[in-house]
Length: 492
Picture 1 (cartoon, rainbow, N blue to C red):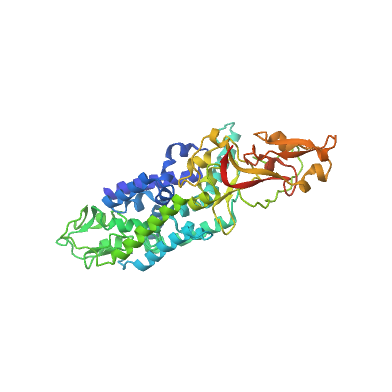
Picture 2: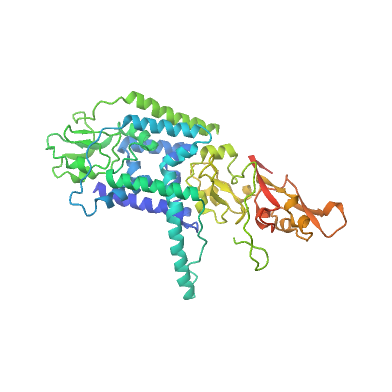
């Protein structure tokens, strides 16, 4: 019964978390956006003490239930493992293996170090479980979902229905797509053959919660009087943590899936309060691991604390724009500063998935690989839109209101004289000034002459850096005006 409840709950949560990355209407986020904020790493980075303490208490009471019910990457591995057992006569294919303590410590220390060292955070982002799942959903599942939606929109249109509408499907980043594919393949192979290998060797959350789970109040226990040593529970265990011959269970690796409890046909395996008479797992050097785990969490906490379509008015073919070279890339309003954003963001790409204007996209630069960056070739950051701040689970983009966003300067526009068509073609324009939502761009006579030709002047104290001027500028291939970001965002 416990296993069935766990599976149903896990499938529901996995489906809802996946829909957070697929739903482009914002409906799912209105009701279930909190599911992204209860993931362990995002909660730590957001300094969400209540969630972190709650997850630790959950683990202390029930074991690593988080890994088998809440973590989407863990549940996805269970799905792969289940498919791996289909059609096989001997479905109980696992066997007990020793705890890879050294590998787990190295992976945890590597994760913390990469979070601390600028420029190598991509390693930590690849390892972080929620972020890894987010990239798989955003880069691999979202296009399939959007194509299906567009197919339904096509059929609905033929029936004079507006129940569905078409949306653009585009590859946001080749590098993120490749990393997502590689991650999916590795996880699928490991889970298909050996169950939860990733969780118990590489995953930093598994290592941290595994330490707490050793002392959990409720856990699977072996009744040595009823057990006949058949090994059925061991072969069923997806984490390979049950030594049926010695009647030992490594609780640091157990993910509380209840498979062993349901499998045992003698009632020797039960999920209850552990008694002292039950044989424990073999001796472990827990002091060293505890120190490293607690130190890792403290270090992460300290670091965190310190821390529409193209338009030209006609039907002419429009040359694609090139991305300008910026000294500082603008970050979404609510990011506080470039450093704050970089330190908190784990590149889960949820904000990219929900951005309605195609402004946010994964970075291809090595320093901030896969983290979202702002580009304005295909859209601009509308002052009334705060979707990214509403969904960010790590606090990299703090939640703001539309009124607050309109007064936050994320950067300022810079005019490039040699690109402006007023200078190069001697034609009237003024598109940037007419479309500026805050009136930060004025037009003055070219070269001070009394002429119909006017050039833009930017009031940098009033500009908020929304990028509408850069997006709307007709100059090609480089816009005659672009947004230069602020290192630290300020209120104007």
